[in-house]
Length: 327
Image (cartoon, rainbow, N blue to C red; front, side, top):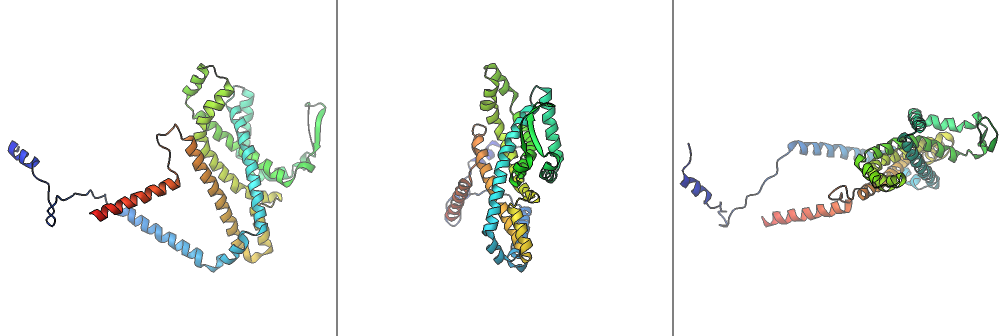
């Protein structure tokens, strides 16, 4: 049954509903969709988090007074400096080695491809602790290292045991292991660049080195950065293994102090945990700003910084309060 044209016209011309108290047109507000499951999940998570925090604060077994005592002790800070030094040197050397290995994997030479693939396969298969212990006992296998003609005279030779300090063994072991993983990260980032970019650069007659530095690498870094930062975080935690080659890093210092003060083992472990959290959090902050830098030109709007998010949330809250007050 169809309506008459007059009825349709009268409905269209009908005045909006009015507020009976003020006589003004009533405003209709769009109510958000209710999500009871989200509120229930939020309440459960808050209860669990509150219980965990309550247990951390009130449990005397954690000995927070001893935690405060050990947190900035010179022995712990000296170990922290060793951890930072080993991680920084290993990260730089590992990344350089990873770039060379990635270029070898992408090379047209079958020898370079085979050697790079074998290196990556080997060090990704062998546990890091095995590599460190093997290097620690390397002088028993080769007392003297030399460079020269194979099966011929040696031009340069030196005593390996005199130069293989604990710091050198730790940095070399971590760098060799890190290079294998960094190679795959770098190779994946290079392969993520569109093939048209390579073809356009080749059509312009640009040299291969210039193509890689100015065209391919800046675009590949958008993919390389988040993946390699994950590797850096793993590297910082992997430095705890250098304790097994007699290098007192952060974890080694905590272990040594725990042997001397057995009653403070738990607060000392908490000290190491908090310091590792601080280091990895600092790396994550750097990662955010590096990703934001290389996102320019790839996204319409850059991701907001934490301060920008806080200001936007505060502005939205003020606008909401003003709207509710006006209603």
